Length: 178
Image 1 (cartoon, rainbow, N blue to C red):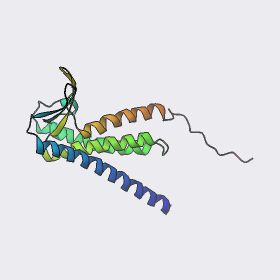
Image 2: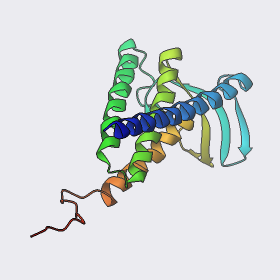
Image 3: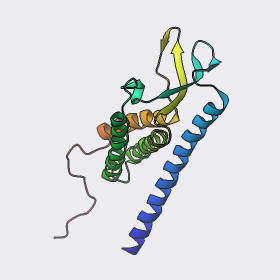
């Protein structure tokens, strides 16, 4: 039992370090943009396709509720993120150890959530800076944390659809002795 407990502590420590590292990378990239660009300024990287911009978002994904200036909306997003982190812990634990993609997905989503949560707590908004577009059509600006969340959600959905037992009992290799 002690070996298993030690293994769990090691696993939790590694996951915490990964989440902290990815959230720190998110904060670092946002800091670079904030230090080098003025709010609203942009820099063309691939003309007609990709720019670095400096915008802020008080809302949720894709600017949802961004125009609502309310302390309750801010608190709601913060509370939702904390609850979501708890759900992600449960989802991580629900995947069998051999379903690594599902576990990686949970860690990616948690990392992105922590990165954006830090912004919300420290600044009251999230810094977005990646802008992908073709002509006049553009995807809403996003950041590294948003990317982690989006890719993590795709991996999570894939894992849930293709790697879970769909309610079936797992097969065992044990044979009965009669």
